[in-house]
Image 1 (cartoon, rainbow, N blue to C red):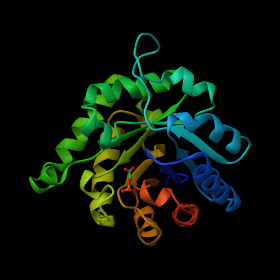
Image 2 (cartoon, rainbow, N blue to C red; image 1 turned 135 degrees about the vertical axis):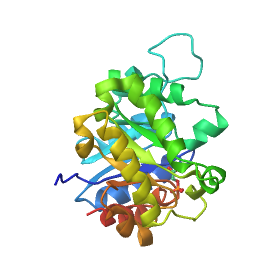
Image 3 (tube, rainbow, N blue to C red; image 1 turned 30 degrees about the vertical axis):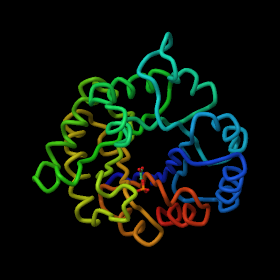
Length: 248
Ligand code: PGA
């Protein structure tokens, strides 16, 4: 049996300020060591100060998006090369908020993952169904379609990514997928990955969607759940630390 080290990633979304970030990061740093790996994905303007605060710590950092393009006339976009200069380790791609509010297609998400990998960042590829899709029995088809675009674009390199299953109906709603529901989808995703790469058993598959201190341990103990992508509970050090400890 492969033992995969757990990974807990805070997705700060569009939250933060100099003062709030400093408090949050100090609280996280003070709680070290963690048994699993811990990372925070922060808004672009704060990357440089977060990089300084977390330098030489065991806490990694990343972005919440990355351009699919290497460079050029793409106003407002941030390239993987720029992120790499800050020592970024991760780049979230295809979060459902970006798919929904910025019309990101499966192929664009796959191209972003490719651009991130090309500069040494680990993409955290998000997939997940809406409530309507779940109720129509389409969950498996939707997440497989989303992941398949990334598999086709990356080929063998798919083994380098982290995948996050985030049911849209569970994000920010307080409604979490049950451990069984989440595990069932994770098993589908791991089987799909296994058909594409021998590294599937080593790959980290995160669950995201209203993960909190009181439900994290049971979610993270499922066979194919290797940690979490945490939104609301990543904004207060005590909450985030409690979730990170649940991955121990
Ligand atoms: P949530 O967000 O934990 O607030 O549900 C998770 C996410 O969107 O990554």
